[in-house]
Image 1 (tube, rainbow, N blue to C red):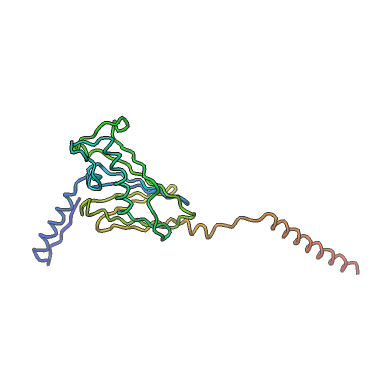
Image 2 (image 1 turned 90 degrees about the horizontal axis):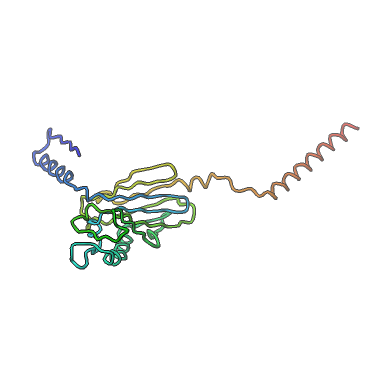
Length: 229
């Protein structure tokens, strides 16, 4: 990270303070960076959080027996607590209405041996990541999606959540932080619905066609009679 400092006609104290702030920002550790993929569809949204175990240990107790390792039983015990934490700390609005992240949470450990139930040592927590997936059905169309994070007291002020919004073939990057904890995403689906032609009623169109044909026939008959006079 590059910090630019302009000290011309500035008090020396402000210059030193700016250098200190830059140093603090640059000291943010990669383990403080988490990720989120937001997959947006017309009538559904999927949130895929990716946290390392060191971060999750700030949200819930993982090593419950104190043996400096995470086992299957501890994972199972921590899952409801992690789900409850995210539901409370990541607030979501769909079409300006409060909504839950999803009715259930799917955990997908990403390290080798996770499916075999191999314990993870606490010293390896920063290098072991987990996907936490929430899916939510939405009455179409999904017009807007707002997320508001309040996880910063647990994660620390330097942590960030790097989010990627995916909609059709479009990708957009949005960083969440203590300074910028929320974001309102407009899908554009509502505007599309306004300009989408309503389905035609074939029976109505057939009736209208018949009436037009009858009118044209009467006009043609009237012109023929006029010419015969």
